[in-house]
Amino acid sequence: MNVKFLLTSLKNKKEIKKLFNQGLIISNSFFIFKYLPNKTNVSIRFVISTSKKIFPTAVKRNKIKRQIRVFMKQIDNFNRSIDLLVIVKKAYDVNNFIKNGTSFKSLISKII
Image (cartoon, helix red, strand yellow):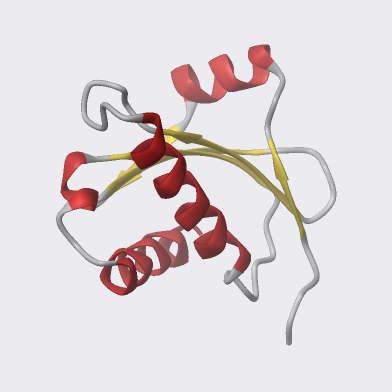
């Protein structure tokens, strides 16, 4: 059964700080996810973090953020309400879009 959920960005500075400091951590070689349950309806509120030190050009950082937003939109059968911080590691740049997508989906399935 497909569950309809909202996908929004997290913009409140206090909530982002709380997520960064208190979030539960799960990671693989391409991403670090920090997440906490939220009290909204079935929704995912997310923040994407790309380091300026690892990805020096804004074009590269924005491309990575666009790709991750596509991965987020492809999530289905999600039944929890969470706040999610996605931190991108340097190894992300080495692989192609498809391999990064499968890695993202395998990691997000551990949260579900």
